[in-house]
Image (cartoon, rainbow, N blue to C red; front, side, top):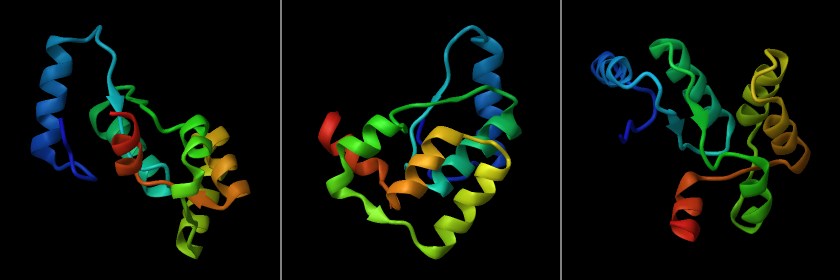
Length: 113
């Protein structure tokens, strides 16, 4: 299901309905490898109470496609540090900060799918 960023209450209710009928399925989120992508993932988890797992949003993808990555902007760095302070997604957040890189999900889609 394409959510286009932060989901609204209608999408949230629809996702929860799907989950209630399929509670044993694995739920994945494919987003940008940047602080906003991980904030969206965390928001999705919080608002639906479903443990969505990041899909193709890891260190391997950031490293593999680093030639397509963009540098973190000041606001990205601030958001990344806030995620790190909350101990959310620590490995990939550390990697993004150390490499000073972020990656759009469209690159991964284009190269892998």
